[in-house]
Length: 199
Image (cartoon, rainbow, N blue to C red; front, top):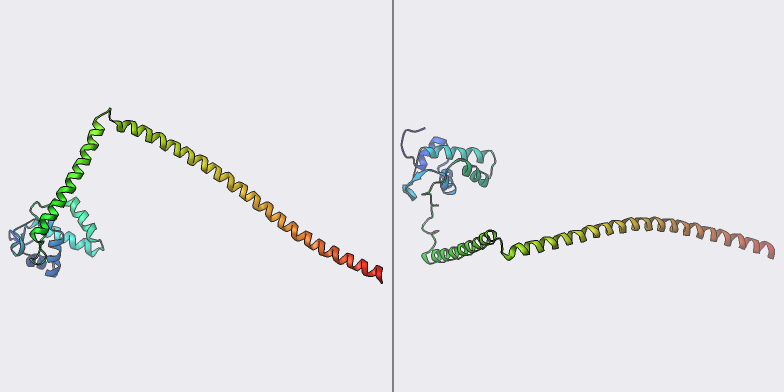
């Protein structure tokens, strides 16, 4: 590894024998796990970052997705508190849009906090009506399960009965074919007898 204290993207690309554009993409995609200082063009990486870039390169070459790489980095390397995804001037969010996004995020956070607070209160309060509701829901679920079980038994008996009826119908159809054949033979026999008597 190079002896410099901080490394540029170009230096890391040379050290790992990677295209500089690839290292630029990875520094933005996986910024929260890359130990660095500064921002934008002034961003420099600590020597530990070379190992992280090397792991990213190896995993992607092995066919892992970026999501797989991110999960592995999350388990193996600490988050960098000062990591902020780099945004170009054209991609930067306008201040008004940022304020709206912050207000929306704040409102969503308040709703989540309120839901969590209510849930905790219900759990901590043993006399809460939710315990009674839970019992009634459990009873209803048991009733529905017993109905489903009995319905399943009824369905099985109907299937058995249906199979028996199909077998009886098959026998009756075979008997009908035999009776038609017998009737034709009987008609032929009678016609022959009538012809012999009349001649």
